Amino acid sequence: MAEPLVRLENVTRVYRMGDVEVRALAGVTLDLTGGEFTAIMGASGSGKSTMMNLLGCLDRPTSGRYVLEGQEISRLTNDQLAAIRNRTIGFVFQSFNLLSRTSALENVELPLLYAGVGTAERHARAAESLDRVGLADRAGHHPNQMSGGQQQRVAIARALVNRPRVILADEPTGNLDSRTSVEVMALFQELGRSGITVLLVTHEPDIAQYASRILVMRDGRVLSDTRREPRRAVAPPPAPAEEASP
Image (cartoon, rainbow, N blue to C red; front, side, top):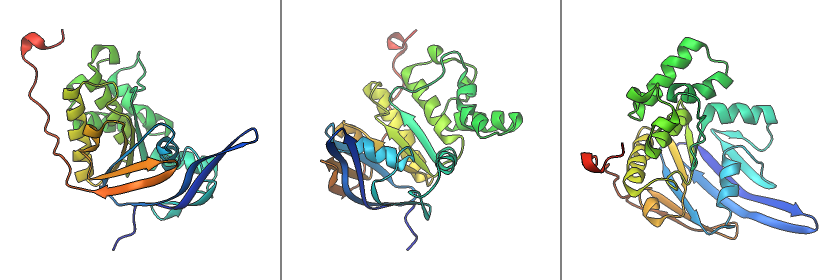
């Protein structure tokens, strides 16, 4: 059997606030395979955001091991962690985090710009990434010229442009209506089928049902880990013309 893409082994994360010790993660062990679509649920303070930060190489465990693509992450330098974030991991956020005065194409190009990729290749790969999320015809539009769903798809295209192995999505449907949320879930399911590992944090049970695995966290531990047949996300038909936004 192939090695898991992501492996956490008895990972803890402890923060100190003065004399108080806060155990945000309390011995999490977890394997994620290539192409797996996993949702993480849990109340505020359950540890799900801390785990996403660790998986995204934005933080380090206090103890335990984090292995990504066979490489132990805990011992790497900050520069090495930054390189992994830019090469292996794509991030999608609730608030889109797009630059308002920059076109969709230029927003998607940003990770490649930071990676030192030449202009022609940047343009080509960003255009390819926008096409993958169905927005090839919106490349020149700015965020204020697009709907919330289109902005989130631009954000997903930006996460994909470096061809990552893992997508980490933090409440990606939190600012979207139900119709658009299903469209985004359909896209994540397609990414999973293409071999990308998708890890989604959500507080919405209906959204979690689109994942093939649901983790529920409480008090820094994985309370339950359920593999299941996911609900198939079928994008609904466009709204009638009279209901569409101007």
